[in-house]
Image (cartoon, rainbow, N blue to C red; front, side):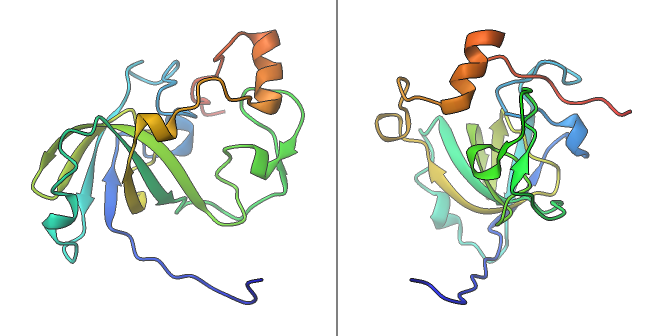
Length: 172
């Protein structure tokens, strides 16, 4: 059992995206209905000066990456949240809400190219200025489980249609 342990992380880079506000960003990077362009967003990940370029030398050839990041604009957490797809409040750990006990997130993005210590990405759902804590390559045989069950999301799919997800919210 871990008691009174605190972890400190320093970002390896900063994401630059077209999304300045949460209401502008899609709920998932591949669900772009309702965004300004209706296309997956392009972004860059600018790696920090202290990170040696050798750290990314073998990323070429990977189509997708996992970004582990901090929800840097999160204002605390709630034990239950209302998902954007509708339905009742759900336990936060059964959702992808940014309002989490530890404000960290995970996003699968497409790697378009690498230029020095800048990664060109597509299909992001992160806000401009998001601190990225780590990168891991997406490995299809280990990371994809197409027949996995998705709990309450499967129930919503049965009534709303598979893969239904709203676009970004509009300002009130």
